[in-house]
Amino acid sequence: MSHIAATDDLFFNRAELDLTRTQDLVDEALRGADDGELYLEYCQSESLSYDDSRLKSASFDTAQGFGLRSVAGDAAGYAHASELSEAAIRRAAETVRAVNAGHGGVMAATPPGTNRSLYSDLNPLSTVPFETKVKLLAEIDAYGRGLDPRVRQVSASLAGEWQAVQILRAGGARSADIRPLVRLSVSVVVGEGDNLESGSYGGGGRIAYDTLIDPAYWHGAVDEALRQALVNLGSVPAPAGEMPVVLGPGWPGILLHEAIGHGLEGDFNRKKTSAFADLMGKRVAAPGVTVVDDGTLADRRGSLTIDDEGTPSQCTTLIEDGKLVGYMQDRQNARLMGMKPTGNGRRQSYAHIPMPRMTNTCMMAGDKDPAEILATVKNGIYAVNFGGGQVDITSGKFVFSCTEAYMVEDGKLGPAVKGATLIGNGPDVLTKVSMVGNDMKLDNGIGTCGKEGQGVPVGVGQPSLLIDNLTVGGTAA
Image (tube, rainbow, N blue to C red; front, top):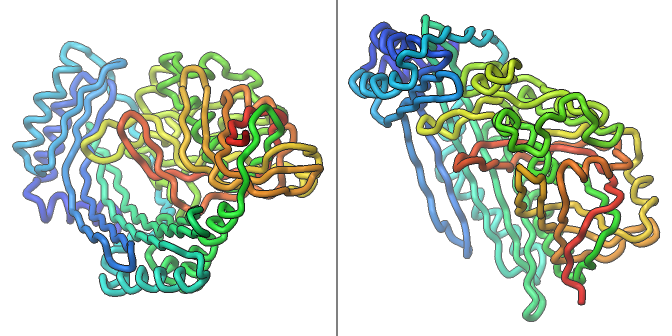
């Protein structure tokens, strides 16, 4: 069954909506607009949390609704409701029509269709019994506590989602997508005396629960969380100052995502509030640095068959060999900038207006052996895992906390350090990348990106790389 047929069953057969009358309402609401759509969504989600050796919480939610948008120039009218009815859509149409009254726009071309499918449309929530999910979390708890006498606490959570969307445009064009999403998270706290440290691991993607409940997978997840916790237990205060920093592969790409990725989203550049505004075609990074946003990776957390405006996702090159060559675009900002949409129009739910957002943002591999990169550093930091971070889009300044990092002394790994933060400027830090590893790796499938109050699932990736000089905030006296 096609995604359109499957979502017709949800939105027009089960709900009391008539497709012809609904299409008439969309056509009327968007008359004179430049763009717009009716976005229909049905979403089931669940979350289970295990803590203190017992099931702490379990929730299941079903949400459905629509968002109707009309775009006129740089303005947009948006109305949404959780009621899927002709009357509710009619009221929304009366609201959004005000933005294009007297505008006289010409409706933008319909996004191209696609028969590509990047993930299964099976509902992960219904394929594994609730009892199996609780048993999994209990086994994770018991396994973690039995690994080492220093383990004080084990926490685990399992989350899943099944989202079906259909997008109706003026003139009758329709597109649809069905998106599964699962995630397993494990945290371990270890202690010696009064000294407590923690480690964590998470993974998932647009897959079923089968991978996560495989003992080989979750044993590895607990082992890794414990390893990190024990590393931190033996850590020393981090040094402070300017020094070379080596970033490990995979999840450290979150620094790339925050410090550089947001600044390459179309809306910030159209409004010239990004540090990268007006730099198209110019060198913004060291030679050898290539960054892409790729929404087409199969089963990945940040991937989308189509975005939330109906545009097929694609692999967009943002920086090529150090030069800025592209932005991530939704339909409105692409049109206003004279560019093409890139499949990056995303929204958290039907209650949110779409905007340019990242999917899977990655730095591509270079030609250096990771050991060779490390060997060049006399005194510096090797950062493997990150926690929270902040970035100012306009200035490009960022601050990131390291959850696993090591001293590098004479080209060799030294002791683990705690309390290290990386402080810098996104556009500036890219110019200081002097070595790019051949070990490009994607993250394990845990990222959620926030922007203007909206959260969407994303992925990151990068190889090992050397930043010649970066400010490290430390705790060493």
